[in-house]
Length: 203
Image 1 (cartoon, rainbow, N blue to C red):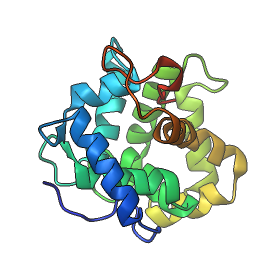
Image 2: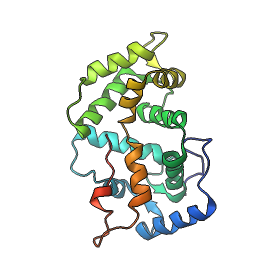
Image 3: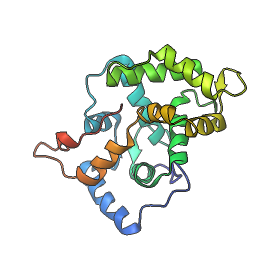
């Protein structure tokens, strides 16, 4: 199993009784104790995507796979639930930063942000801004030292201070729809899938 490090440390943990309920559900759905990337995409209804969109979904999966073994185990799964249900905005922004920082070097450059927004656009359809316009806007607003890279501090402070930017960032992974499936979509249908009206989208 993966480690028990929290994806977004500091939030209130899922109570033990609730954790046990989630464990039974997780093991019923994934008897091996591991959720694969394919199963993750199936749960979210995200098959048949183009290359850019697939790369984005893969990156989301990788941020939840904390020990990088190629699977999401139960400890990683419950850490993700902690983030979605109980995480504060700053903790979620730290997760978004990790999602955008594709090479894991601790900063986001224009290419990384451009690639993310292109993938989000591929999943969500036409946006008001082009990927290039969005990337330039973000760096103009929050790259305080104009070095072409965003640190975690710049990203969090700049996003929290700009509600329009915060809304756009939030659409790169919609926590509200994930929370809906957590609370309402726990029982699969007769074919073993979660109900279609509760399937979350990455937008």
